[in-house]
Length: 109
Image (cartoon, rainbow, N blue to C red):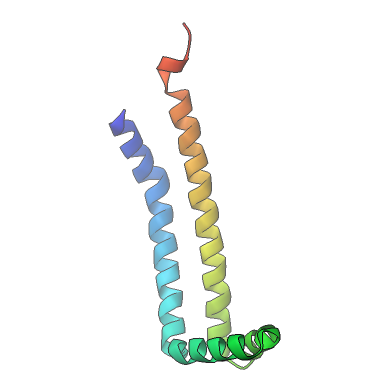
């Protein structure tokens, strides 16, 4: 049975994991090249502790003031993360159904 799960994993799960991790890694690299992440987090914490109401204005202002490559990279990385979560969740549901179908001890013959 382990061989069946190994084959299923290598055919169904592994390609999604590789593609999603490569896409996320590429967009994270682009964000890291164009954005000083440390400075953004310092400004974010400063605004968060001084006036939490201005947090949304800071986030939208920071996104609006960046280069288009950063905006596209942020949107694409969020989309890749959401698709990765959807794919992994769907594959775990599929794995649960597969395990339930192949569990012969629960069936009464």
